[in-house]
Length: 365
Image (cartoon, rainbow, N blue to C red):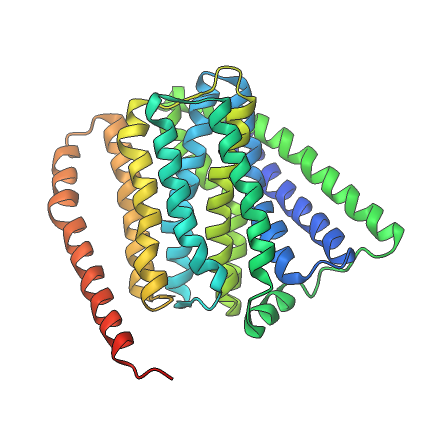
């Protein structure tokens, strides 16, 4: 029954996010907002609605729910970059034309560092939440302003993606869109309640901490809309959408989701020593890993996508080995720290240096 509750909760979250995005997109297009702005804000933020619902629900519950809430934000950001971008790049190399994405990566790194700094005192309080939430308001205005500078190719990509969304120009159409939004929100609320309740019980039965459950199962479950949106966009050749959705969603998770959760949590969101010493640094490292990829050649190659996927498998394996106290943990840690990570860093740096030399050697004009 607990597993059924958990699975149904994930299904309700995915369905609720789909209805919410569909209704809000139709309303926005009907009001004359450009498809590019809708794609960058309504769709990208709407796919993070499950994270918002689960994190706020867990924050309101406190205790075990708060641990799941924090794990969900950290785990979703790690999952989005390593798994979703990795899988999308493995399908087809992702060439990034979108100027906003290249500006968003430094913003994502800055937001990740800010979250790490705010959590050093052991919790996220209301002041922390207000600061983060103010950041998402500023970021939204930034998106709208920067969208006017995008090239024709990017605009056409978003127009093609949203071509099937019927504009809600008539009162009846607008009413139907509002109904979709309301139904989507209701499904998100119910799904979040069931998912958090099921996750707490599953964590106890498996002997895993609530943080680990939040970092893995809950994070992957609430990221299903991002999986569907980005992988489908990659298969259609809409690669700016695939990348932009992930980066925008990660920023929304840190600023809006964690910010709102910290605002409503009765006693704040505690940051465990395990999260502070390992998971937060991994989240920051994953954000920084995007920097040379986006800035050197503005693309994610297939081998980089496979590498991202391998790192996600390694990350989850480490969490499970550590949580269960497995005998293989010391050897696994030594292999990662002594061989895999240094070799990867050297490879990426050499590739970045070569690409940078090629760029500087090109004649200007």
